[in-house]
Image (tube, rainbow, N blue to C red; front, side):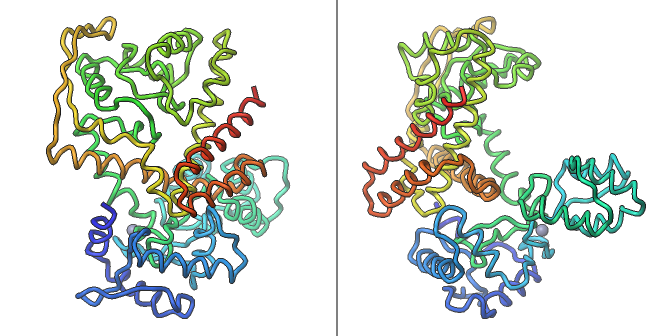
Amino acid sequence: MKELKETADNKRQWNENFLKYTEFIVGHKNYKGLFFERGEDKRVKWVVAGKSDKGVERRNWWNKKCLENGVQLGAGCYAKIAYIVHPTKLHTCQICGKELRLEYVYPNKRTIEGFKREFNVTIHPYTRDIYQIIDEVVKANDDIERVKRIFKIKGINIPSVDALKQHLKVNFVEAYSKALSPGVYSNSPDRLDGYHSDGNCCRGVSDKGRHKSNMQRYGQDRRVYENWADGDWKMADRLMSIFRKHDLSADHIGPISLGFCHRPKFHPLTKAENSAKNNRMSLKDVEVLLEDEKTEQVVSWHSKFIWDKLKNKIVNDKDAVKLCDLMRKNLHHILIVFSMIDEMGYGEFLKQFLNPEYSFFDYQFEGFNPETGKYKKVVSKKLTGKNQQNNIKRYYRVAFDKLKEYREIENRKTNIWNSNEVDAELEKLFSLLSAKKKKEAKTQLENVFKLLTNIAESNW
Ligand SMILES: [Zn+2]
């Protein structure tokens, strides 16, 4: 799968500017010694698969650069070193050929809306950086106050436009603020320069749209893959589509986004009821889950530690909401750990936590009752065709793409759990993985999750 993706990317239509950019980069002294080869068309083969020999060779080069520049090897190191090494800090988009800055200088959707509200200006995404925008809109002293409102800056006196730009630089641009986005996200070491080929100007146009429509076509719930949820997702997806046919929203009693399984069991809710519920659980929901748990798995393996620790402490709806908050946060931490493992080159190890085998069955439900969401009978059928193989590829791709997305979030906050103990246990995990001790690594991963659970419990 990886090989296929690599070839597809190298063969894609390149913008003329991107072609020039690749030649500039491979010819620049900063990248001396970094492996690349040329295809029959003489173009630089920009992408290599991280796990291939060529990928390892590139990774070793980046590791060496990290050491030379005092960047500690570990999660996030490749994003840091790609930035340091880049000679111009300007990236050219493979699709449209536009040059964008590597820093977090572009207002995101909400910030753009803020400028519209305060200044009545229309900013098209990725056309101007925040400093250019400030120069354009800030004319009078009162305008500084408006910018402060957009960025929710309170209690600080900012006397001049220069001081404003300096404040934004230190507290937003260099802090990887969520109010801003970079011109391109890092993608090291697959791409030669350590950045995605598509700039953020075009990101989503090429990849995400395609995945999304595919997923919808097959009636699949993307969140299942993205959250690495356990459960017979195929059967659950099929049952879900029956709910939809009856114009009902299929509501998980234990939401996937909190770490629960994607099970073929739902509360029938109208669409409005479901959106009001917003992935929250009530005391009653927790009770149903505890009852179901006597006969089947309700929570994904990675979230079982926190669930087991807290599930018997829930005595009212307020507790249930608190449990939701802690479980959501915990799943966030779990996916960050997964993304670190993937980033360090051990994605293969993670595949054991996915369940592609469900793809080989299909289901028909008989005697469905839209009032209760229950059915009389389910008939299963074994499938082995090309569709199933494609489905598995898609499953892996969506799951791992989510981890790549997490890398970008992770880069924003260096110490998300703020615990040296977690960091130390993660170090142990990485050395086990590097020694190819798969079984011990799995046990160690569980130790990490238990530790994160303890931290969550201390907030109870
Ligand atoms: Zn573009």
